[in-house]
Image (cartoon, rainbow, N blue to C red; front, side, top):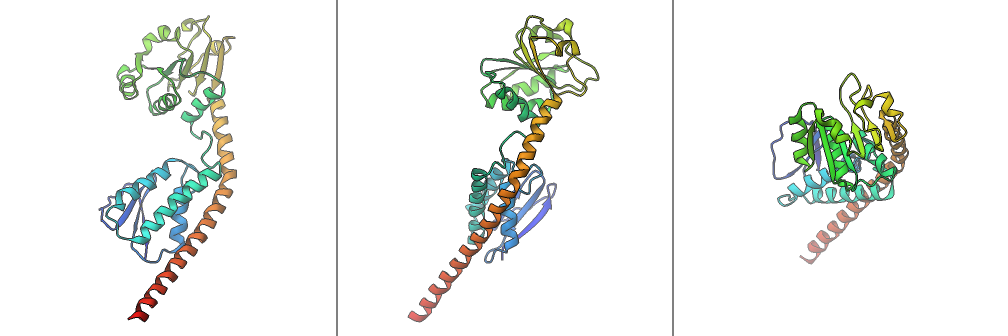
Length: 292
């Protein structure tokens, strides 16, 4: 019989040939055994693969994690039941993502920031993009920007080495905040997210004749009120980004019921297929006995 053991993500797992080890952001799951596959295990893996068990409903990464776990184990895996289970789960994941909007729309601040720029019809490829603050959020934003075609990305930070370390990963440029005045003169898009308790973008160091889109993710705001209100500035604060995130989360909630119905149907179809396979196998065995 097929079994699953669910561990916390810190657990040390000893790999064995007759098991599939699925590591997600939240936990580690070990699938093993052969023969009958209990309905609850089928349903669980189908829901995991479709992102219905993820903390972020419908996330895309989990499908790749399931695929990678199966790929790593498949060459040495003799359990036909595990092969069938994981192959079907991957098909179900594809089905749900094709026929629902469960994974559509930005649900992280980093992705929502880039999506907002695209909705504003800004040409990322030809834009000079400046980010202020060297940390995980801005690193993810840089990654999304480059994936959407951005080519000129500068990252500034008070500690230059941190900006340089992140920039080096993505073939972008680093600068020290002391040079912010110079960089702003070239900037078309400014994304700022520092932990400063006060504004870092002031009117006296802002190029007055420069049109610019500013997305300010900091709390309190990094951008001085006098800069926010400039006619040549399109200013979006953290609340504007959060509205996009919350709207998309609500949409995913509506798609959750549709995705759950697909999973329930797929579980029943898979159980029916397993039953047919068993019946065919039994018929073959009977024929063999009769011939003898």
